[in-house]
Image 1: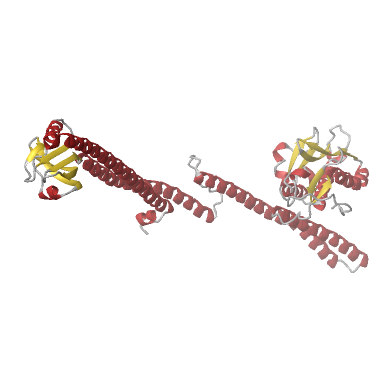
Image 2 (image 1 turned 30 degrees about the horizontal axis):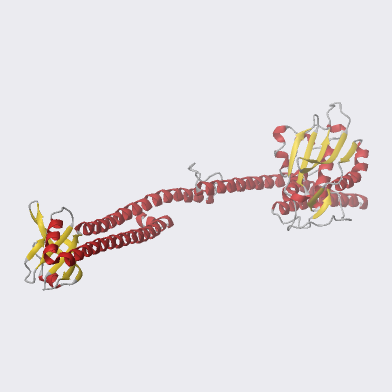
Length: 485
């Protein structure tokens, strides 16, 4: 396909030709309408003027006969202008008027008629168009009263010429403009296509060019660039997850295999075998738990979970989960405090929100324990609050542990991300990832802040009025089962 053929087949060029055709038709109709109305107006005025003169001449004829008519016509003929007069006897001899000669067709005519006549002009004689009324007087005489309408014919020629030239220029400008616009648009689309081919070849860092004009192609490019950034981020996360799976799951699998292999090398001992099997089952349960967490995060990020949303009291949910963890906190020597402003209505999946709160409290108890403080002088405690801030429901879990450096707070929300200081604690590094996914599913957000010292985790959720499902509000659900993991 040649470049010209490709250009002519573009939608922009075809639209330009379509608009040109429509505009040309509209222009022709408008000019024809104006020309027709102008012609009708001029013809009406011409007829009215000639009729008025004829009535005046008729009165003169009735008052003084042919002689007075001849005298009046002779006087009027000497007045400069476009008026034409002729009074002739039955033999065609001119008695008065400024028409020196008439054709046989005009002489034999009766009533309104158009005709050509000749008159002196610089350099010779010119032939002009006229319109007149022809009357036969008693005795065979003729009276012709008319007007020179050559100017009107010139106006008609001028309008036709202007229309033709205008349409020609319009076609030239329209086709040229369509060609220019199509070339520019085609060049931008070719750039977009080249970039997309680069991206399809595997270079996810490529971005569609933005001209800065803010037009629809720029807006489309910006939207696609945002999508590509998200895809690149997801692919990077997928690679990171794959690396983390290979690193974090390979060790427990090797440990599990080595333990079984070691037990098989030892002499048969039922107690040893039982202990080995129990530890193997425990290790396998941990792996299953990790895979379940990965599947849950994947389902949450795909929007395939959280269908069972009800109106619930966030304060009551926080209190219930905190009560379940009081024995764990007491065993670790940590003071667990739970506070709530009162009923806070949100709409969400009770089990998923309960799982998210459970993960936040579990992390705080793990990393806010005395052995994780590093001697910062604060008593080990975990503070859990549910409150409304700026029209948003917030669950705040704060501890007095070592905290998370500001540079690492975004990274720890990823999968399998665990800071080095926490490697001594059991876990897979999926807890905060799951909480972040639950927050996004409910239209909220998760952020990490400094508790000075310690970590302050804030899970924000839209209030019930901003989180309706299918446009209806449900009654608060009761008796839902909550199982910490």
